[in-house]
Length: 158
Image 1 (cartoon, rainbow, N blue to C red):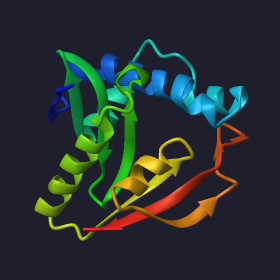
Image 2 (cartoon, rainbow, N blue to C red):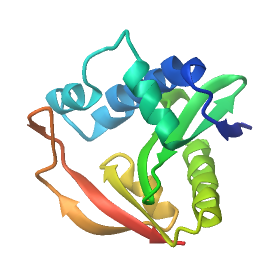
Image 3 (cartoon, rainbow, N blue to C red):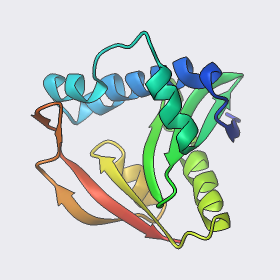
Image 4 (cartoon, one colour):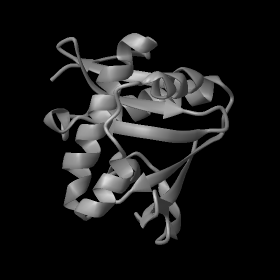
């Protein structure tokens, strides 16, 4: 499988990246979280994606495309937080997350950052570990929309 990594293209990418997020949370993360936790994390289905689009444009968002279809995306905030990393389940296990994180690390180094941090879900933790992130703290009480959805704080020196 080959993919292209490119910058987020504003409103044109909002629906596709939101769909990737929903599929990744509802399908991939459901292997490690219960139905109520998944529903809390995924949140309500949205028809107005203006806030979603604004968040992607404010971050340094990279998008992975496979055959002209958005397969995944990642957000890097100015302080070095990898805020989002999601891959559509149909593209999982094929190196898309690795390609996105590798490009994000290259971008972070170019910005002069010396470390990246993330709050990784249980399903994403192994991916981050394979790319050199280490667990800083377990967050068993992480709460989303009133439900506990445990995750881990991780970091990687650049």
